[in-house]
Length: 492
Image (cartoon, rainbow, N blue to C red):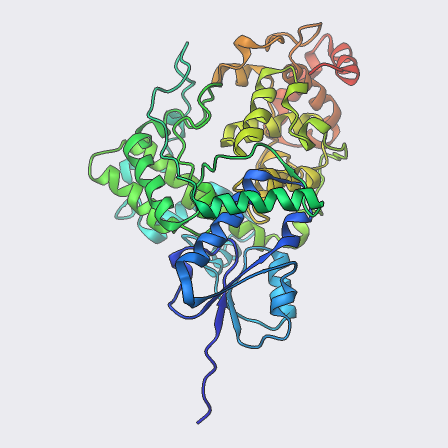
């Protein structure tokens, strides 16, 4: 009888937790070329290297840990490797070229096969998040009572849109749990300094301290802390922004989840159990479950279902402008508008911003100014600690920039300064006035909103959800003056 070859499992940077370990021999490859492809936020580079090195240290004699220039330096010619399906089209192509055995993907609440079956059953209906989310709830039983949703409603968004408390500097919550850096982090810091000085990488943003989990134990500590100190406030204030409270009530779990350190199924069941035990309000729990089991799974599945060409093959609003240098260099000091300056500065300091800052500040500004959606997508991947090739296309190309023409979102997510004024404390300390669209103190977001509608009107006039905004545009007595002002704008 022929002996069965014991395969070594090559785990990628998104597969570093216990859910990807079945007890056999493992391999981790730290390829420096990955960090030199495009400019990258230093906090992200640090997080990836620290997580891989910590995992290698945990696995000890069970792991081959290679620090090389390219993956092929290790993989070429190997016939004893297996992988759990990688998390990008490029990685899956690489694995296929090297004839490596592939196991089904993990790290999500629902499977790719389940999503494909659900999507194929839609018979021409749109693949909207709400329908997928209900399907996932019904399939898993999370926040369900028999066939009915817990609390009698699927969606508690109405309860989860409170503005920040008036005149508050913060939500008044305890500081989040922060990891303690160790000798591995120090070595990572030294290596990044050396790589940068050698010209092998270009790193942007502040250098630490590390704020996100890089081990399963740290991720568990972060989850426990979130549940104990911020879950109850997460729902009401999940869309709110305060200048001096960069974490608000958010969990800070997106990065460790995307590293594979903590299983999202365990996370949502643990959080749902808090409501069942009477320790957390349903609106907060449902809002969190919606983000993890709903939106996170949804954008993962769309990445594969819509195909590799989705990222580069969609530009429904004909947006081709390059990203400004203040984005490319994270140069917040060159920005006058408080909301954009503070968001870019938060990114510079932490490599992170919460979802409303991403959608309604960064994304809103970008769609108004017609930035190239592919360039913006790649910038989001490179500048955010939780940025991955799979997570950004549906978020940026679809939801944020409406470049897909309505596959992900039914209308462009664009607004004037009034929304930002309502949901943040930014506007009270800004040189621009969100109520003003024309003149020296005209808000770039408010004026930009009307200029955007003027530019894209021919492309969106068939969208029923945009009928009211476009009717407002046609009634605008100073339309031409506003458009001309924004074309000439130098201060923003």
